[in-house]
Image 1 (cartoon, rainbow, N blue to C red):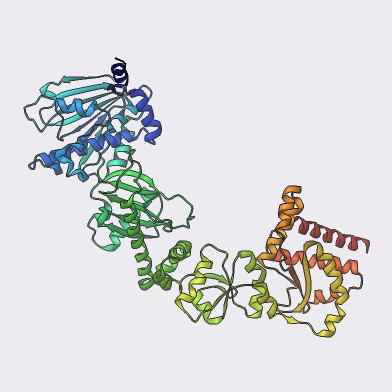
Image 2 (spheres, rainbow, N blue to C red):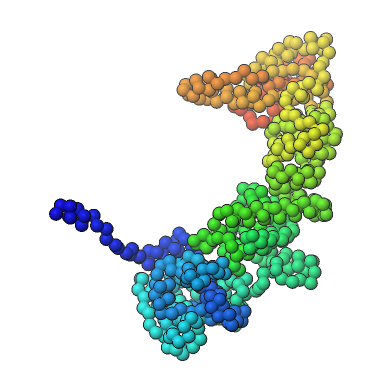
Length: 609
């Protein structure tokens, strides 16, 4: 008995999920769909799929002549299609079952790629704008079957009745929506706008009635697939399309064709610079129905300078049908699109240098990003790409022919610190502080083994400066001692050299290790005992920065002759401040205090005199 009770207590029982339709509609409208406007897309999708299913059922059916008609007065909307229709059994199975979809029927599963919908929840989207949905349908599968009417309310209740034969003498379906109180989604002008937005490329004639005159919203085939009198006419038409739909006049147009993904379309080159981090907004149609205007995973990240409009028949949408599912198929399509954009750039380099120059003037950064990973493209584009160098903005091959070795400054600050002096001394330095530039400079020897690229070190510049003669250096010893004592607080040494240009009185030289050590020391001074001790434990004995005074400069010679150690020290602090500002380095608190002190001391000297 005990065993029997134990079995009965654990015997599983079957239950059915209870669905709160209002809660489900709220979930759809606030979390799955971005806007209630998708109801138009779902209605069009069902109508086109019904026509597609009838064409497969009846080879004699003229799908090309089929029309979808929408009528609305702002409170009620009707959409009628001459599609395959529904039987009574199908109404119960498909319309009243959450997740039910005719696209799963075995008889059409093999042709599933011809259908727009796949998730079976599309009709529920209409409850985001309607309180009552009525579907009246007559099936083409059973010509003798009566027309059936399914009427559902947003409280989850529905009725199924037989409709008068006169209402649907021919196979097809009519869906009628009764607007929710206060909703304006069924207004004629809005319905026209949404129908045109989602369905303008659909291969079915769609007409909206309710305004002053019926409006045909379809405009097929897609512009990029149409015949044009000549290439110029096609380009002008695509330019107008881009301005109307995308909101900008394109710099150029790239045709896209990826047969493996059933994808065709165009990529419009932006006429203005775009940030690599900016979120792209590509327009994607799925089987001619607009899927999204904000796809951000369609092209490689480096191709941030294009905006695409495409149609595909095989890439998968997400459940909301408002973006593409990022799977292996999309990755393949993305790589193929990237390859076609890359081929376009290479073709410009070979055939149209003027257009390439115009493109690079706007999108050089994108090309540099691509060239990092494409040796062939790098070789083709390097003569056209411009870099900041001590010889001005020039190409790397041209610069390498004039300077050997090529020195690479790792940061913008390092470059600015030495650019003027290096140029005067005949040292070739490239600014590698901008995005991708350092990687491309370092790739130069792979293309030309005769080119040598080296990292810029302070010793390279200091070694090119001429020493002063021994007698002059001895005469400056007391001055140098006072100058070094004054700048010891900021961890800077002082030396005297002769260099060009004469107009530069002083040069501040340091390396990254010295800067890191100064930053560590400043952080240690500002930290509490715990963190101060930790920072002190990682102290490094890095070489100190050097303030190199130019003895060829008349002002430096006059300062070196000052007998008053206090005034000489103040003058050296001022020279350090000028050199520091010229190097564009961030000021530490010690630097700020020194500059303020030297400025106030000089003012005090002037006012006393």
